[in-house]
Length: 113
Length: 113
Image (tube, rainbow over all chains, first blue to last red; front, top):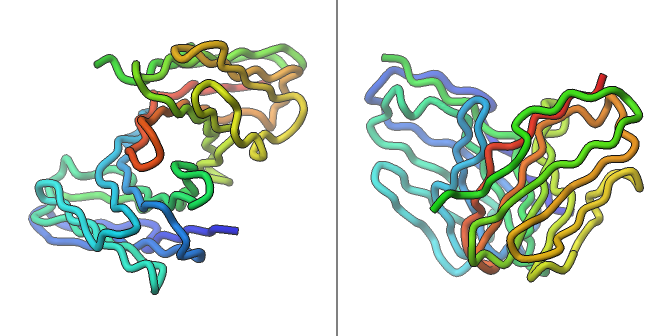
């Protein structure tokens, strides 16, 4: 059974800092690894999707890496801004069901101005 | 693109009543998912449709829960009879194929008293 763990559970940083969010998964037979952002009272917004054959994906100030062999992914946020404050969730897609995702509990990020 | 549309946004009902949640996926997306989010259990996949056919309903908690997708542009999740422990935020999401990001609606917050 796939289990996804995110560390830390919460993080508070001053504006401008670079930061790393961690995600680990127990079953390396994944189809892809997805990172989402959730603002209070809202649904999830897709940030990055890394296919199992890829090592990383970048979008603006965000960079996500994937190491299937060790069961880990990281989300790097450069030059953090108060608008980055949200909950960040990673999700692993199970192989046999393609886009069936198992979610981690999320990291609550607060960027202080 | 209007995104995934869910209704109602909030639902308050008494125990024993029937509840129907509605979802309109993004046009052209062939996969649809119903998730439930609670503080205790995080995001849980309830059921997954591909091309309007239920592929995996192993996450549906009990026979009180049922979901339908009569056509590519509409899905419902029904709870009958509802119980207080069903209180949660229910999300619908859609995607275009196995290796595409999930797009979430803003959710329905269900409170069963």
